[in-house]
Length: 333
Image 1 (cartoon, rainbow, N blue to C red):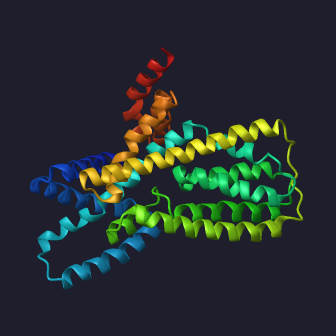
Image 2: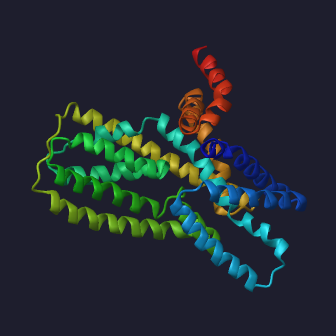
Image 3: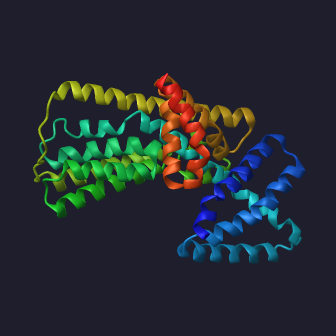
């Protein structure tokens, strides 16, 4: 029973977040209070269905927040309004699967395999390639790209000694994630810092990129020395030049897409006077849809998104079933 109700919480979340995003533009007092009141049961239900770890952490933060609220002398009936402050973060997280889906149907992960087999004779040659390709994918896929990259590396290094393979995979993927997330607009911490300080993301970006590339260069030099003496045992390298040319071209396109995404976010933020996180949230879906359109994979875009959500949520699978068959019908047509 508990599992069944938890799988249907997406209905409440969807309603509350939709009302919140609507109120961002309408700015109606009654609608704001409606969102605030609905946020209370949403908080209680989320706490009840959370794992033990999140219940403990949530209890600590709720206790600290309640004490601060009471010490500020604010009337108690204003408490629900303070639950709205994190709605933009929830909306942001709920939209990320759309751009993940667009990046996935582009099959950019295939380029990791191709690039990792080009001109590689030692692990010192493979390390910078794995960091670069993994970091590029992580810009759009976030944590899911870590598992994806680790799986590809594990397959490519299956002939290597387990101790060396595990050390190589852990260092290249985790460090690529850290160096990417320090500046990525998809990283929630970056959005929080931008909104909290009120400074434009473009003002931060050059400094964040400078830090990221400086640490990257140092890391590459250190690790190339560390893995220089270990030969790479791969499956052979066919058509190296053509593969290298095509792969780098597709990676360049992916970086250009990132630039267009940042431009769309900044224009939206300035035009509607929105916070950085809200601008990213509102841009993700239309940008992902346009991206899928230019790849001529719009139906595959929706199909993949529905399949991913339905795989984790049975009631959601039932809800999306008519839409899924509708997409299949037009895809076949």
